[in-house]
Image 1 (cartoon, rainbow, N blue to C red):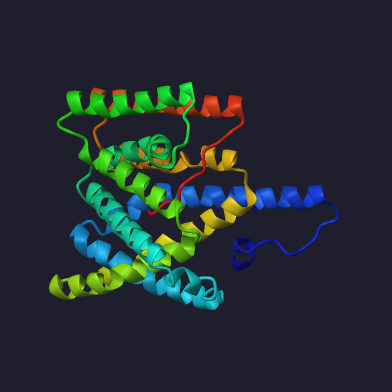
Image 2 (cartoon, rainbow, N blue to C red):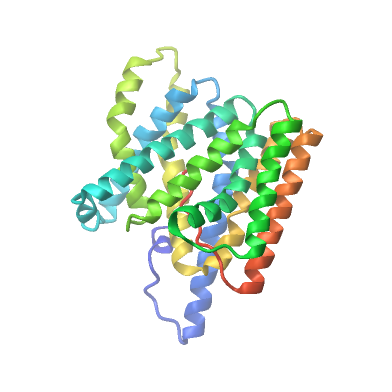
Length: 312
């Protein structure tokens, strides 16, 4: 796996062979990353009896440890130190750390309270929200069809708020924290693995204090074992994602990003047996229509929005 995650060093006979082989590896890595993110609710369902805040603290602690070991093994500390010398970078990564922690906590809560469908809707809406944030904060221009896609996505949220059992705060919060997380990380020149390692290190002291304060003596060794896997489950898809991003066009990554919420939708419906009422189905239909408009516009204009890093 280590060879796959590195830049290819072997030289086939022709450049086309090199490009084809690299794209094939990138596609497999991209599918692997989004598939893991799609099925990750099954893992959090397995630890649903543990309070979400404790699960979050374990995820932060084990992620920091796993990624520190990984960075050491790959000898990648050298490019990290210059980032830490800038107060601006530290401030932005600290903001990113808070956003990613909130995103993780809300997602864990959604799974533990059987509201994965709403979480899935949030991640469907997120790419379209990111477009709107780019317009508001980065002065990016939206084409007419992109405006339509964003508007339809907002209608999906309004529909669920008016016809559902209440305001869909989980979907909105997940889309918002993930969208602003991508916006913050866009301004820091650091890759996803190194950035998340620094963010986890920033959160680590508070997470350890919370684990001491909220200590649950009744946890079994099996539960401890499951919680210790959270570091690998967090880092491995990020590695695959980074490998795919180096090898694939952003247009391809734009299509792949919908694998995750689609699988989450299927997991919620067929494995967790969450109720898919008319209000939810209507919102998903609007969201899928918005995505179709966005993808069609991208194909016509041959211009794709970059894909933000996934914090799940």
